[in-house]
Structures are given as structure tokens and as C-alpha cells.
Image (cartoon, rainbow, N blue to C red):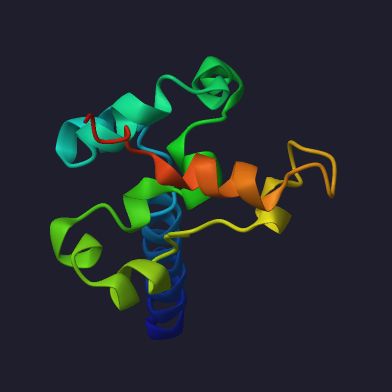
Length: 122
């Protein structure tokens, strides 16, 4: 009987921890990113061709990783913690390949996409 309870406990613990790990890797949506902290970046992104593809998944998390894993303020304020939690701060050209043909993205295009902020006026 004790062995059965121990096995059930281990299975239950495994289910709980695996479901928590899964929950930490969910997309939260570009609107939530904008609402919480990234208003300027969201506004800039919303004027790009990627924004027009958001319905097909081309949003912040497509390039930067699932936000639920790194969206807490204590994690976002610590670059090492954010990276460890799955944030891809500066995606490289290779990370564009799921949507773009390999070699079709130039360094200039990648830099423009990463800018995410309107140019200062004046």
C-alpha cells in the first residue's frame, strides 16, 4: 500500500511540474507585451509587414520566444535571467528561416526589424 501511494505521489508530482513547465512556455500575445512594458516597440512593430502577418503568428513571440516564461518584471530587468528563461533578445538571420527563405534576409533588413522604435523627429 505504501509503495502504491509513493508511486501515485511521484506520478502526481511529475504531472504537476510538467504542466507548470508547459504553462511557462505559452505565448501571451503582442498586446500584453505592449500593455505591460513595450508600448513604443509595439507601436513601431505595428507599422511593419510583420504586424500584418500577426494573424499567422508573426508577432513578438515568434521571434523573441514565448513571453510567459520571461515576462515577470524581476526576470525582464535581469538580462541573464531573461535569456535563461527563453528570451531571444536579438534574433539572428537563422531564426528568420522558418518564415523566410535562407539567405533572403540582409543585415540591413535585420537591423531595421530590430530597431522597433520610431526614429527621433528633428
